[in-house]
Image (cartoon, rainbow, N blue to C red; front, top):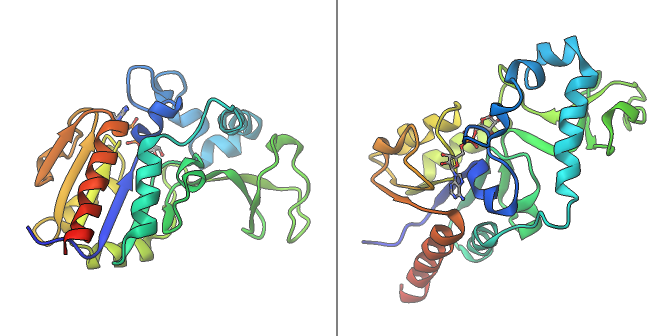
Length: 238
Ligand code: APR
């Protein structure tokens, strides 16, 4: 099989599970404890901003826990990003900072980032204070109106033009640690199949597993380093 040239990798909450962060839909997942309608929609924020801010403040505080570190899967993808000569885009649905802390550079957080806030008046994205309720005024316009820089249900994901261009050019698409429940990310495989080789690396079959040419099931910290090592061997061989 010839080596791929242009790679798109999509990740979900499963890649951060072994770093100690919960996923959303597993039995111990976040949506088993909190309702999406209460904390992850624009209507929820309009109705009770303090409750929404507290939800994201708590998840942001988790990222400062020394026990929460990038794992072998995050590090393997960062090495692939660093060494891959062709086009490479790591699209993550995750809002944690673990891919960035592992060293990924060609990284697109399509659902936003816990570490950032956004001004409701001028849309400027800026570093989030630890507690959004005590936020200073917007760094750009001075309004006292910051929201989490998180894409809520019903809102447009970030970077879709760049993602669509990368999907159009890729000949390898790899989906890691996502249940394939949320669009548009869940639809990426259907966009590329037939034109790109498609691979799912997940703890168990996802909603879209049947659309992939190949699916390997197991923990990301085992599957991802193995996958990356095989790809990089290709580089040496060719
Ligand atoms: N290694 C690999 N995969 C894992 C691991 C692991 N250690 N642990 C869990 N998984 C898999 C689960 O089997 C599941 O398929 O990760 C997936 C997590 O699925 P979800 O909890 O639905 O998370 P995700 O797919 O990222 O959710 C997508 O939904 O709630 C929104 O915006 C939120 O970005 C999120 C989006």
